[in-house]
Image (cartoon, rainbow, N blue to C red; front, side, top):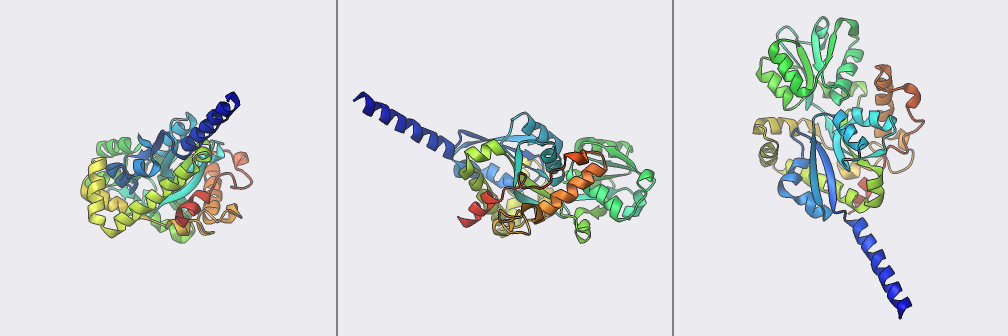
Length: 333
């Protein structure tokens, strides 16, 4: 009898572990304060329902903050830029890329004051940028591909809110930043000079990605796949009714509807099925040769070139940095 009871207790314990593994009590999701389709899931609680867990939403100001959160084990999943994600991977943070939340097109752009009409005109000027961000990557890439004299440009690292304040004080002449801060610069006498989408013809894939703690993904793989399915559902909602989606997101993040619409429309959204192919995260083989693998190589070499990371730290391949099984599983269901 004692043996039977022990077996029952053991079986019950095993079942409890399996149930827990399928549905964590809490999932900590980090996001920037800007408009994004994921905010639709925050507004209606659909992510909590899909994960069968309480979602704790953690806001950050820049990709550098997201890396710090990961380093202190304070978040599980985050949506932020490809450039800081690459830096975190090279610095051996125990994280991996599980999906692309949006390819940056006009969402991030260079805003200039009067007299700055082309990218060439920033020579001799003071230009602000958020450090360790996709905006910095795009700005530096624009300087490179347009063969500008970098020594003639005063580059000032500023957080987005600091950039707006510096602009209004007259401390900078231009700023490369994302919405809603780009609109703030535009409403204060600025105009668009250059957009990140202008780099696509030069082979630059700059995007926002979903990054997860490896330990979390290994323990809760179904939760990760469910998260990605919710992302696709919200992309579909946005595409079906952009005005309604923009209004919901605007209310959620405290931005004007026009700002939310501009931001959501300034991204391109590859589907889950597309992301599980060689053009994006790959099908699980030849990861370094996938679209995101090649982007990581290009981005890491760039970051090493400007001293953000050490070249000797760049891994030989990206097999441990990209995990497409979750996106492929999400697309199959």
